[in-house]
Amino acid sequence: MAGAEGIEYHLAHGDWIKLLRERGFELEALHELRPGEDALDPGYYDFVTADWARKWPAEEIWVARKL
Image (cartoon, rainbow, N blue to C red; front, side, top):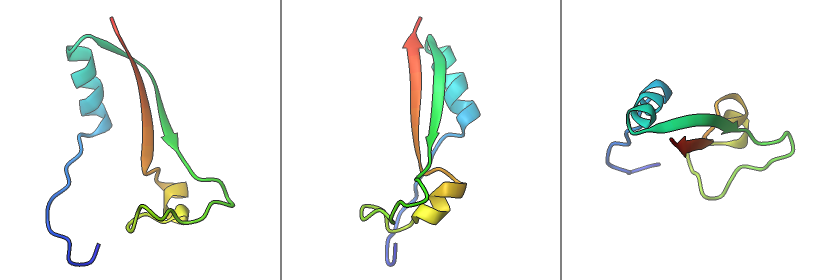
């Protein structure tokens, strides 16, 4: 994003899994969402195109259950 300032930080998947387990959760699934071939670029992202997200998912769904 042009002119944006700041830092965005995300835990790696392995760190998320470790954190969830340490807090008593069992990871049941991780879904990395990818757009279909006919998908258009989303209007709410200015840094991820549909073509890019087909290669590297920009959205995920984590399914965890408290033990």
